[in-house]
Amino acid sequence: MGIAFIDLQAQRARISDKVDAAIARVLEHGRFIMGPEVTEFEEKMSAFSGARLSCGCGNGTDALALPLMAWGLRPGDAVFCPSFTFTATAEVVPWLGASPVFVDIEPDTYNMDPVSLEAAIEDTIKNGELRPKAVIAVDLFGQPANYPAIKALCDKHGLKLISDSAQGFGCTIDGKHPIEWADVVTTSFFPAKPLGCYGDGGAIQTNDQEMWDLLDSLRVHGKASQADMDAANYSGHEAKYLNPRIGMNSRLDTMQAAILLEKLAIFADEIALREKVARSYNSALEGSVAQVPFVKEGYQSVWAQYTIEVENRAEVQKKLGAQGIPTAVYYPIPMHEQAPYRRFPTAPDGLPVTEEKKHTVMSLPMHPYLDEETQGVIVEGVKAAV
Ligand SMILES: *Cc1c(COP(=O)(O)O)cnc(C)c1O
Image (cartoon, rainbow, N blue to C red):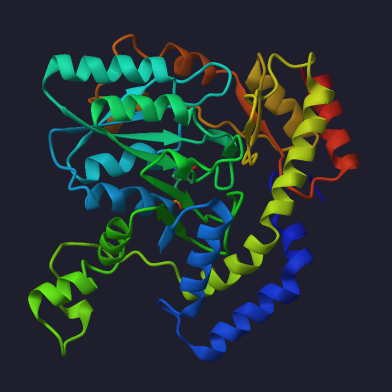
């Protein structure tokens, strides 16, 4: 058997009895849509990451779109985001007719560069064509973005801050989760993410009850909230048939919430295991490859990916592939170079770091259950290939 890039079966072997029982309970009670496990998971997820409230939804992409809808983003609004990210980060902005403005990354963490962000905000204001409204920072590969610096810029310019923590749920800076700085934190439960379910799923976190009510309405076709019901004097009818706003259908399935409850119970332990795997990769590969991952002092990555830099990447990947060692490139074509996004603005000095890193980054197999022997094979393979 070849080496797995992400071994989901190893995790399944650890908790399959619990997951199977959780699924059986849902089949028994039959409340497949917004069943009790959804609320229970939302509460446990909040407790885990220090947010007051969590709102499950259909996937990590809708989790980004829903707050933009709640804030009423519209044509002419600018949302600043990195270009070196998964498509979904920028994709949701044009859904609302608004424009992403692409910002460069730091060369060591690959996360949004606050200097480039500030230049992009000031340039947008000077230009006068777009209204700066929000920033979407990404916790790329699991490491938190520089929230203290980014939040200071958001406060200075009156911008909302979304933490796209699809790869970073559980990450911290000095023990604090991104909700300490962000207006909302979004995540994805796509199976390969650090906290994944067995299908699609996502969530939004906020400390603001009014915002939660709005998100809860928008995820169910703009159904009436309790406040809407009171205001409309509409008692006697079901809230979902009173629709004071246009929403969408984006709920976290009960079945997925039940699975996630079992996975969340071992998630802290899995983060520690990922950290251990990353450290032993680092000490084995440091000096042999162009760059091993750099994590800032006080920052805890959840290691969605273990990403190194190499020269002659294509050749290295080919050699490793021939030995049954899988690798991946995140991301070969940054967003601002993808056809539908080329018309949107970038930071005034361009994105030189993004354009450099797209050629050198390469991710190695990473998951909590990567054993020492397999890791040794990967390390030796990489050393020989470079
Ligand atoms: C995976 C991912 C998303 C989207 O999540 P889905 O659940 O697949 O919709 C958004 N942003 C980032 C950074 C991601 O890695």
